[in-house]
Image (cartoon, rainbow, N blue to C red; front, side):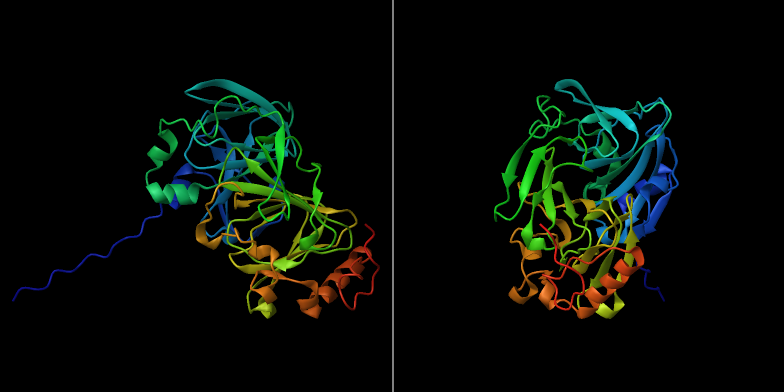
Length: 375
C-alpha cells in the first residue's frame, strides 16, 4: 500500500538577519544601551572600519541601528545602498564625501554632535581627521524593511540608479536650511542636509508636550525617516505618550530616566536610567515618559519614522492626525499631567532627592512639593 508523501515544511527567511550575520561584526539584541561610546565593536571587513549592530526591541524590525568607528588617520570603503541612513557623530572629527553617477564628489566636515543623512543610493565614504581618536558614530537605517522587501542584498547594495530628487549635487552640506511649521501648527521643522552640532542647536518652545520644553524636528535629505531634538528644564518631566515603533532616542545631554509601560499594564513598567550616549526605543504603542533628575537641562535626539513631508509610516507608526499630541481622554495617545497616576510624581521626587535637585512642577502637577518653573 502506497504511503502518503510527506509535505515539507516551509522555512521562513529573514534577509536582513542573514545579512547581519554574514557581516561578521557583533550583534546586540537588547532593550537599552547605557553608553554607545563604550559599546564593544569588531573589525568590519566590508567597510574597512569597526562596527556592531544594535537591534533594539522597540524598533519592531522597522528600522535598526549600528555603531561604527572610522580608523585613526584612515577612511571607510566607498559604498551605496537603497536604504535610508541617518548619522549622529558620537566622538571625533572627520569628513564625508558624497557623490553619484550624475554629479561630482562633494565633501563636508563634521565633529562630535553633528547630524546628517546619507541621500538615498548615493556613494559615500567617511574619513577620520581626528589624528589621535577613533571617530565613532551611530547610524539608524531602514535596512530591515528594504532588505526584507526585496530579499536580495546584492540589489540593495548595487542598484545603478541616481535618485536626483533626493540628491542632485547642488544641495550642499553646509548647515543651511529652511524653517517650516507642521501642518497642525504645533511645532517647527528645519529642512536641511546637515546639522553642525545637534547638542547645541537652537530649539523652539513646544507647550503641548509640557514642562516648559523646547523642540525642533528635522527633515534630512528628503528621507521618509526623520529626526527631532527635545530639551526640558532641570526639575521637570514630560507628558507620557505613545506612538508606533522605531523612535531611536539618543541622550545628548543631562541625566535622568524613562518609564515605559504597555497600555493597561502600568504595574509592569520598565525604568531605564540614562546619561549622554544612552539609547532606548519605546516599543510600539507603549506609553513612555522622560524625566530630568539631573542638574542641567536634559536633551535627546530621536531618529525615527514620521516625515512631515513624505507620507510613509510602517508598523502602525502613523501620527499624521497628531495622536501623540492629543489627550487619551479625546482618543489620542498623550496622558495629561492631571490624568497620570500619582505614583509618577512620587517616583520623580524620590529621584530628585537622590540627586539633590529641586522639583519645578508645582504649577503643573497637583501635590507637588517643589516650586514653580521659571520661564
